[in-house]
Length: 393
Image 1 (tube, helix red, strand yellow):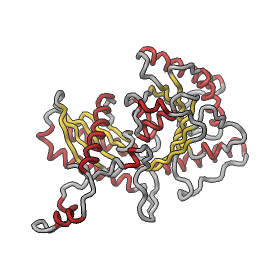
Image 2 (cartoon, one colour):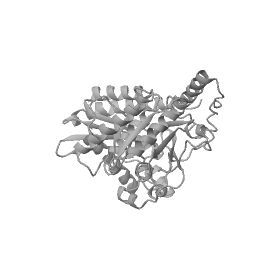
Image 3 (cartoon, one colour):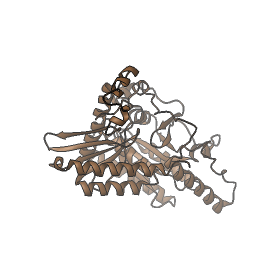
Image 4 (cartoon, one colour):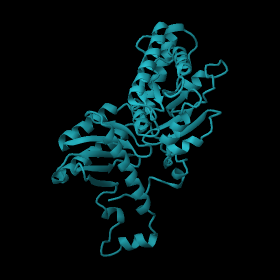
């Protein structure tokens, strides 16, 4: 059964979609906000112990803040705006060639299973200048994503990254630093690995020379022309989810009980997976599941149109005499298809209006579909309970 077309809206097609608006006066406590508030408090305490200087005021309540930030930084023309446009605004990669260079900080608010912001910084901006309020930029950060163009001269980008890390480390020691070695689509595998090794070695050597050993930096090879950029952002977002081990344990139990090859919990809008089971990551399986979501979204757009009131009343009239939602076995989107070549079914089950569970089954799984459907339903209910406990009471 295909659910109503809640995925793609006119705003989404225009590239300005920010998700459904909050309904009612109740504000929800974002899962990532819990983690960020704790990091902010740790930063304050660390600075006070080290120097006794005036530290930033405690993080205000969620009514004032509450949205972790992903900061996209790097040199000019390194691909920061293209990454943001492709991942969060569904822009086709080919159209990013016509994007103008960023002249000011671009701030985008994203509303999904958790609310967060994406700040795109101009490459020429010196945010370490004394005129900038450093705490206003980094005080509520979720991750600093530094983009390096793998096809260009990157020594200056490495130097700026090291200066940034060394300046931020005393005040914000818990910042997640993610380095995207970008534009890897037009080079050979050997060249990509050589560039990655060189960049890692240069960054670690310089930081070590300045007394910062084993800096917590993660490196990702990315491109907007394949799924590598979505996988990299998936790993960044996962670090902001306090209940990630619980979600992964539930997926492991589901895969073990249903003999799934692989299972993902996807954010439908961005196609970022926020959790997966512990089996080895296979890029081809991720690509299949990601494309399957696009198929379901497109079908929902075609068939999920708003029915007229007279049509609804006719469906609820005799001989059924029930509201339409009571006549539907599953109110959420649910679909299964079979890959002809591998004979492996792929199942999609909607968790809520933001998330979907997508799993690759083994050959012959159709014989156990009733048991699989029951286990999937139980797991989905568990996911909903996990996210429910993060709401403001």
